[in-house]
Image (spheres, rainbow, N blue to C red):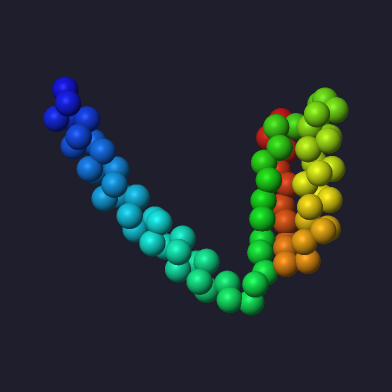
Length: 75
């Protein structure tokens, strides 16, 4: 059982390595210092979620390096 777990971990590490390297390259390609960010909200059905979205928008407004943002409501 331990051998199977070790093999699975090794395979996961091999699969994840190119993904991490690709993320590093994309970050380096954004040399102009701007960011596009996204936030997945679980809906707007309660005051807590509305508070979170208000804070998210306030942070976007306070950081001029964020040039684009996306909000997705799951529900």
